[in-house]
Length: 594
Image (cartoon, rainbow, N blue to C red; front, side, top):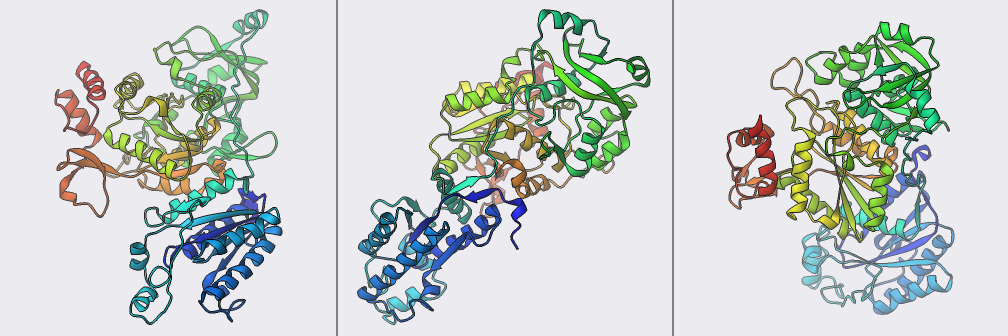
């Protein structure tokens, strides 16, 4: 069953994709996998049709054999049938060996004369790979002489010289092959996303001199630095479509549905609470005010935002904690902060963000708005942007992952994929590495060319941390969507924390965030989710390598964050190849200073 209400794309133009290649190359497998994906993407199982050699020869072409003449007639009939489907605005996958160039050229011309889209796709697995996949035993029979004139063995295969696509299924996974074709479909306007990526606008509007004087005279709430980080998160546009601290209904929708509804009635992914608390005394003092200012005197005496026509409602701390984190234990770092809040929450009819938050910590220039990130993307002429959320220093395993991601995107047909290295910049636990040290370490990796300068945007994401497991992972991805990214890397336990009551146990399953994020792709405006590959230190090669079941576990060492911190404190150097020396020097200097 295909659900049309969850469609993410539409078929804009009919097209024939002519998959040619040796028996066993994967033509039918790829066609079938693409149809499953496309049916779900367009919400209709009748927009894509497969013309498969084995099936066609049982019906339409069952009177034909395998002589050159019969093969030519076979292709002629398929060419005409695929043309008809294409004329009806459908996507057609023709999965035939079609070994002769002249016959494929005939098919192309049939479509060309009718003004239709035709793409020759060489499914180019080698003969050795195809023969190794010989589930039907056809190659074995051909080599024994049981099957005469078998393509690749006793009959020639004329490989395409200039196909529109060359898909080597011997080197690419099925998922990668599908992504390659889908990317081409979008580029050629065969497939069109329903939701066009929109970069969120900044809500920050500086005031005139007179308006500023009025605002400076308002009663104000002196918020802490964490709340100033939330003001920056909302004001810059990272929490779109949220335009204020959540009111009661927005909070309820976020807690119970993980969404928020915009002014047009459209729902957007929003899985975490973003609220402003007040005490009973503050509520009483501000109850009759039409406008309430927000300041953070910890960083300046400037008004940062104004709440218009304020409303107050109960701060249901236990409910918020249990719905968001699955616990109300104050041993959970964020729950502890919530439980210490005032007993009421304040929102309003609207909020004015009147000034960019400046922390004056030497990092403000990295705190870019979605629009500023988008401008850098355009300046680098990127056709794909893969975002990486991080709150730890980067070792060479991370670098390996990020370089491999770029290589994989290039193989999918992108010309200039760019990394958005986007460390979390808001409040973290006291034992986490602070932002200024992390930024120095990240910048050191760029400066020493560990990561190429031309292929990276380093910026700070202003949100505080929640330690909310899968719930927070949704927030990490949905917020970055507002900058126009195309891909998001997610890995093992990116927002996890140890169990509050059971020593040594994780509070959340370490893989649930990745699984959930992959599942909700339609809510991410079609941003592709890239699962994180696990890397470990290979003691034999003295380098970070991807670890998997095919590796000898005894050769690998998993260097934990706690061990890394201890080495830095003790003045030890990590194993050769674990981390850039310049990056390690930054980290080591921080821990020695404690």
